[in-house]
Length: 301
Length: 145
Image (cartoon, rainbow over all chains, first blue to last red; front, side, top):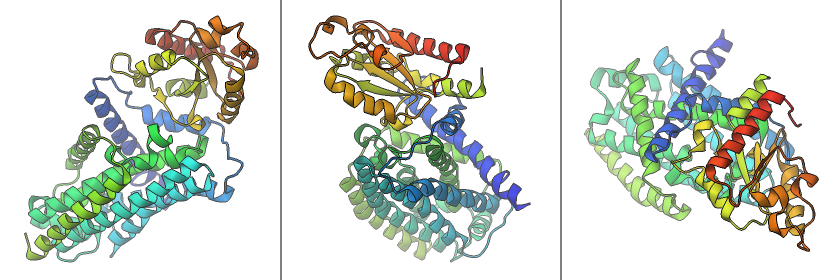
């Protein structure tokens, strides 16, 4: 039975369809922002299927085991994550401390993108990997602050189901000062985690040709694309569950669309920042903001 | 027509190889991405790495120096990979034919799938060329591997 749970309904396939659709929505909105027509709704699925049919090349100088294993591990971590997060609001199923497990599992894809890039023995991939590490240093920090705000707001409950239940009873966290600060931090976290434009230094297409993914092709690249499609659904939903978890079920659909809209507006109104500006922005602007948020949350606002 | 070809032709990722061109064809290729022509609606994307490429768009007359580099790029592309010659230079070497630095026309070196003549070809012509490539792949079913 757990195979159905992990691979079909609340897990992989369900998340892949919604995540691929969300990714398409972001691409379509970007196209409309630039007065273009944009791709059809099934484009991301076709891309993933096409990459599976292509030839697999492993570069000669690469560290082969690490090069092969890193897309698979990052896919596996996100597969697990998609089950944990979807089960929390569909089945109200969870365990104490699952927020911390989610925090750990969310680090794995980025970490293995770095390892895979570094293993591919390409100078541009190495540059991308080192940028990704610096990016991780900045955004994971902010994510923990935003998580702490949500936990303090729900009176110290560390389980995702507990946080949702608390909001169902007392209203969403987003309608308070600290909740709004936590939500803003969460939105910037999503933007940086998915590598969308203001924070896409690690895979800048025009600059370092895709960064860590430069040597990946065929099925292994496809695993990275699947991982990204899954994250496109999981991350916005996770932030919604933490800060706007009052009405779920069908309300989740418009909440998710609003999240994608926020992501694409941020993407299309900002240029790419260089890495020192990103670090400065996250550490010296968002972190003090987060501290203020924590103080407000402790005081009960 | 197999399912593989159907999927492949609906998400062609394009890699742009400039083999010593005068930059005119390159600008016309970039024009295909602009709002007026927008090739993303056919699922095409300009990619930065040759490892992700399905189509190599070649501009410029292939001279002796760029030929070596181009062969390395061509061998790195994962197959099936299609080759499109954009502009008169890669099609027939244009006015550089008697030049001392020319090796041979492109289609004597590697198999070329579609020729798009013009100096430079209009973006409409480039899109029409890609449509011809799609027709060729889906109808003849001659996939190169």
